[in-house]
Image (cartoon, rainbow, N blue to C red; front, side, top):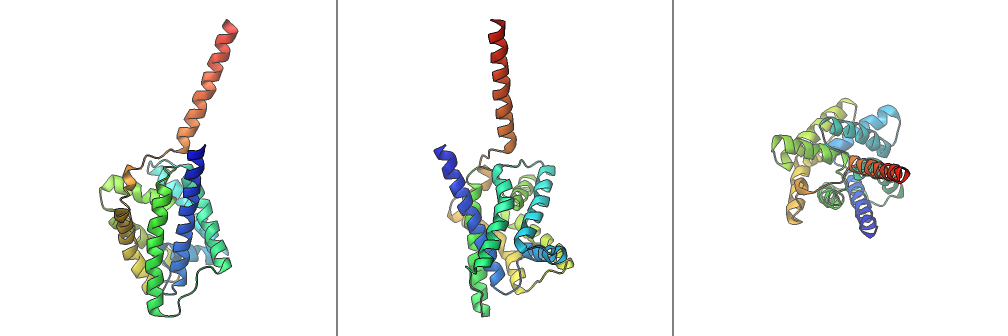
Length: 228
């Protein structure tokens, strides 16, 4: 129980780092990050908050992950729900200041990308399943053998393209994060000696199979007791 509790705490801290990262990149005022261009486009078209749009996109990506054969963990589900909620809370509370200059905006983008890498190390490292987008990144990495930075860059550009078509706001900051986020994530992974592909995850299907095994064992025990 202690191990599970510590993993959940680490998971939540990782989600908070990711939400802070998104808030920093939004408040940099240099153009939204590619995924946030997508979130804003969906938010404006559906009349929902950015956090809710993040949850909606996360759900769609989880479905894609399953189609790609990537198992879903409890961490995946919690990521899909909690990062969006934390983001709305951070924005509502005005925790992250807004940049008032180009240099300040670039600095906030850099901080945001570093925080995202740290957040990913924290929650992926719990072994409770990758986040929706990170699960997709890992799935493509396994299948193509390409680097994290290359896979992430392609994903960012695809999200940007769809988001722009939906009316999301893009700018120089969008280009910086589209190209640089994968590099910064990879740098953070290397600095912290973290290898995402080597993490052994426990997935929801594992818990379902465990419960089935326990149930079958109890049924067999009852049958044997009855026969005796």
